[in-house]
Image (cartoon, rainbow, N blue to C red; front, side, top):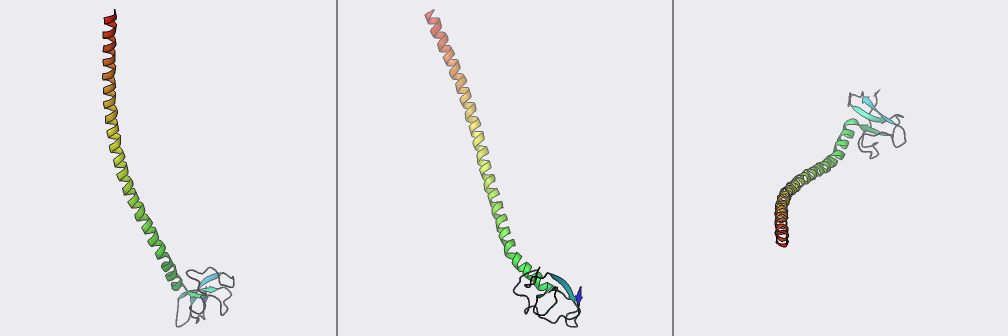
Length: 136
């Protein structure tokens, strides 16, 4: 769609709506028109479908700039969360390494205990044999 009369300044009729305006404060949907004025030929703008004065008017590039400005803090927050997640992953890798070392130590201890148990069983068997031989 296009409009041949777009002389309003977006500072007059944006109604402090940031970013891409979906509706005019009057409740009517907005759409993108293209300026056909000598001053702003081919420049896209949002406009209330009523196309009346004192209704929403906003240049598309201003809406895009506001969307970017509003997104930058969110992106920085997401970046911080990602960095924290990466840090947590590194911490967990350290914990996994420690746990794996503990598993190796525990397996070694279990093997040592198994050998001692086998040795104890052999000793008990020998003592039992000696006792039985002496009483017979």
